[in-house]
Image 1: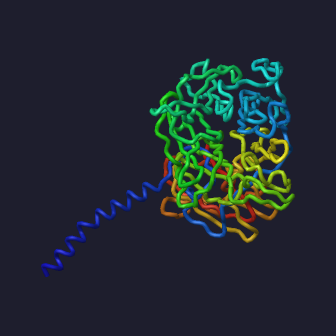
Image 2 (image 1 turned 180 degrees about the horizontal axis):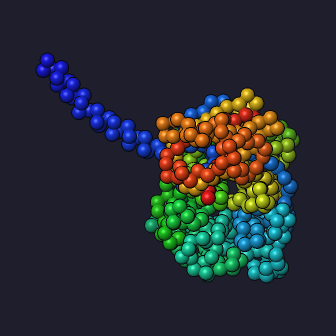
Image 3 (image 1 turned 135 degrees about the horizontal axis):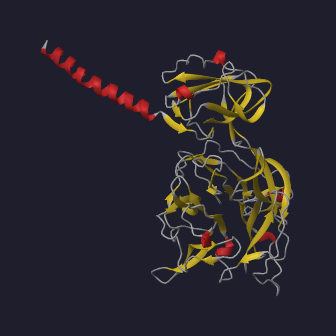
Length: 482
């Protein structure tokens, strides 16, 4: 009896602890999403699914918008940055026909399609300043112009004379007096007239022989720099952060989970402008072992394409999609010259009300060109189901707002219906599946109605789940709003 009593007493002591631990785990799974736009880029929002899958959408190829055919451009042009400043688009890129002298050049556009080279009269080339060159470093090579990567400085404390900032190649002498590669910093009031922020480098730990990117991270409230490193014999990516753009943390390698390491030659990492808490990247993937192509038969330095990565904290990255985001395509000049072809530019431009444009370099076996590709807003990844339909349920979430908006597309026979569940998974009265107005069509912003009722304000601050029933449809994103 004593043994039985002690066992029951021990179990009694354990029960409150187990219950408390379960409650803690339940609370940890509740997402507080507020009114932030939510994109289906990975599995982090989906708890259960049946008959649906996450589908990667490659950009639709559009026109060639630029050809690097000036005497100071040519085959070595590259490392392209796309920025929007007010109503104007700007493109920064490397020129330098044989790398004996490299130049940073500027092109401008009002629509993201038609680009011109402004005559800036700043830097002399072939005894003339009638060109669009804005910078060339002190050294013939391995200076900032090799991989000059600018950004608009959105730090609320930024000085007007540093409204633009940039990072690029540099050199420094280490403790042994040896010349080593480093990352330098520059600033500008207008994106045209530049100066170094100091003569000493910003970051000295890394490989840097790539398009290293930097920006003001509104989530961290710090500057973030994504830079080239070498890891396990592969080209890879690390992040360094800074409060003042001068003093930087030790670079931290990005975590790609248990996926195989690949040569990621550039990174093109950016905070998505419609949902800044989400990070997107479009690295160029280098395949050095493939050195022969059959059309036309020739040897090359390797092949390349571009891949898609995403993150919700800037360090842990999803490689749910290992297939290519941008393939080389039918043009044989895109197969080979791997240190250029299918290299995405850094930056996403909104070029129409419902359209974003992504740009990449191609045709590098001949004269390099810049290709434009388009996606719908938020259109990188969707929850997709076929004619026979499927369903999925989100993790519990707490939202802010009174309306639910979705970005979706269906066929003429397809549909989407949504019900709200409580934290235990039971339908909430009035917001069940049968009450939901059937949704079909193709819209960036569609208000969800339940028997023509949309007001969810009574549920604000209460943990709920979303349950989606779909047929022949794609769901890209959703948002709660007022």
